[in-house]
Length: 403
Image (cartoon, rainbow, N blue to C red):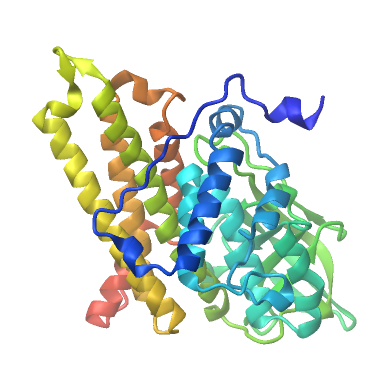
């Protein structure tokens, strides 16, 4: 069976999305920002929107999109051009994630894991040899990567990890397991966080094909169905010493990666909310009940007004955070606020938009249920809703509630 046969849906749908910009936030963007956003929006309308419902219904991961994302510049856009990246600022990165997640959270997960959780640590903590070896191939989509931090027994408390490596003289011996890993079943490399014999956390680059390394796939997901998820299992894996990331150790290293990824999620979830709002707005003008469009009823107008208000607040928060990221001033707590706010807001809007669509809202004819189930993963991964609240609580009071 050809690739075309596998990925073509039964019917092509037109993507009529129009982005809300009630506070003229476009005035805060450069012409380059708007050009980048426009090109990614067109890409999503052509390459993702016509197919995504079919992919999700069949829990199909479109591997061909990895190369297309690379060609479009979605992987590590903030990585310097000398390593294959786009050399862009963080607002550009945010806009790219916003547009991709407007198409689908699973597709954004594929892109943001590659950029923020694989390319970022290699660029920030890797040797020059590691950068030259991996970054250009990751940027182009020739290679796919994943990030191994979460374990079966350690999610919100990653410092408790049991995955470990021992110095065997001419190599390291890695043992343990990671769980809920986006991209894992198809990844060529994994950036894995493990404890040394001294108990210090380090990052290692593990390559597919290393003996004892396997990536079993996670099946029967109700969420992120167009994304591939799995485990990383290490059974006496011999890792060359040159694969250790040399320039940072400790739990702060993977948490820096997560800050970059959470920034992308803040923008991405806002994109999903924008898609749900736009679909609900258009449907409210088309659906006739009691001899007039349902958009003429007060309760529908209330829902739409509240959606637009919350999206506008998130857009402004994301833009300001992007400016602080570009200036190197953004704190982890500020990123936590934006991630939690955007995802919670998007979930609420997806649910309200589903109600506006009535029974039609539960079908694949409209995007809300897909966004809703996807966002149930996004609200949990890379810091749960409650953990981000506690990060902010720690910042406010100076007292860590989770230790």
